[in-house]
Amino acid sequence: MGLTALPLKRVFIEATRGCDLTCGFCPVPRIKGKKHMTPDTAARIAEQLRAFPAALNIIVAGRGEPSLNPYLLGILSKLRTIPNATITLETAGPAIWKKTFDPRTTETLCHKMVINTYMPAKEETQKATARLKGLQAPKFARGGTFVGGVAPLDPQTPPKRKYCEFPFESLTCLWDGTISLCPLDWKGEAQTGNIYRDNLTILWRHSPRLYWSRRFLANRIRCPFPWCATCNHEDRQPDHIKHRRLEQEDVHAMRRAWNLGGQDGTKKKEAHNGTLHNMPK
Image 1 (cartoon, rainbow, N blue to C red):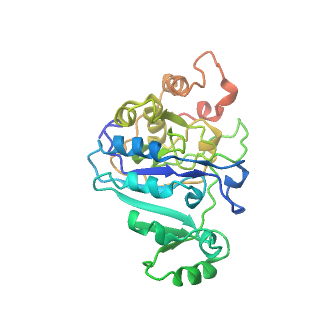
Image 2: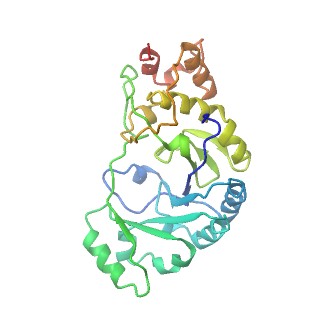
Image 3: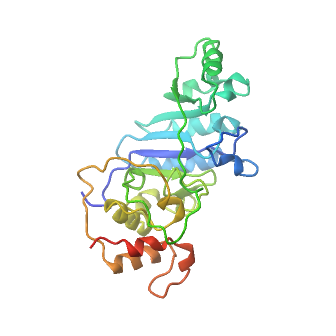
């Protein structure tokens, strides 16, 4: 299977950027203010996702707490118009036991609800959820420690040689319609398009940025950016993602696609130089 014919499986929706919590591992509290997706943006996303033939898993989460969005019910209603899609809403447990969010208001609009107990409050969250009559038992998930997009990086440090599945099977839609390469790009710097400007089907199949990111990751070489090279997320590389030898001209093509500069070194300081020194022999 070619890198341009991969089926889209997951779509991450950033309903809100910003959060009231201050979990130690999470970079979101560093974001100033809160920004919310509107139902109009969600409608545009849903309209274009209906063109994809495969059943999609839609995860409403992102770089913030979705229950803070005053338009959340409208957003979920728009996403429910996507045929054969499974809608998963992820929310923080403390939002429930602090009584700032009642998950019963969204249960009929999503198929799954994940209540994350990132803070040491799992017992409080379980008790609060048990008091909500009529709510089906949700799935509890412990928080991780992903560092993509926040860790400082020495330009001379080689990037990690790990496979990552996100560019091969998922899209991330930010609050304003921007399409990001990865749901762990906390700063929203890995932009591949925008729902108000680009067609998602064309972008998924023909975006140079997606193509070259896939080429590098198929060779277990992290993309030459700090937010990718230092991330600790890793997944098993499936058999249909084949290794293809990368040449020096491929590095230049990757840099041009991401506006990192080519052979002349333009904007070289913005890229991670380690990739150039660690090409497969």
